[in-house]
Length: 252
Image 1 (cartoon, rainbow, N blue to C red):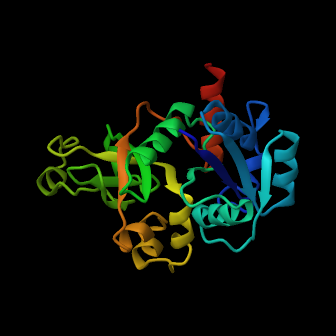
Image 2 (cartoon, one colour; image 1 turned 120 degrees about the vertical axis):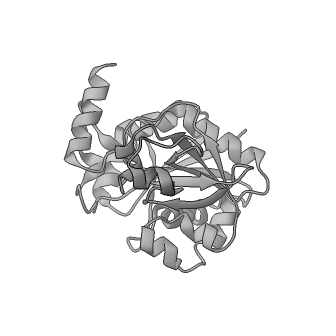
């Protein structure tokens, strides 16, 4: 199955300015992410940015670069511009690999693309992984997801969902009656859907949670969620995350 990977990369990160160019284990963060994409089965890997510094660094790495506008509201909006600039057909499967995921296994990139190819009714596919501790469940920086019986997303939230009333009020350990799932921020979609997505205004629930995938659910479009075949490594949002990733690479 043929698919493409686009890596949206912004310089102006709120918590970690210049994040794509920060050195981790002797390489720019962006290089690690590009290497994960190149290890996958993708037929094409593109870096999408609005910053000349990131563009220059990506070209040194030999990556294909598309310069995009600076006013995009999300990485998905930025990828939609790439699709238009490169003239990709509506049925092209595109994987959104965020530019701060240096530890994303190539196997998961392939998995989310394969899931998109296998679900004709879904407009988007993504992954989840079981939550095994209370700190993760109650961390607002960790997005949670609840699905229906067929694996389609019902809701994504930064809050603990589903809320187990009796267990949480009694302060017990994690309930086991319903699986608690962490959302893995890796997406696949077809180019034709992205052309529709960018025509929609941000949804109220999207703005409230700061989660762009909620724009899709707001319009009652189906997102299929598959359990990740392996646990992904940490992303990079803060200086503490940089230290965690460097420690992880040092063990390899």
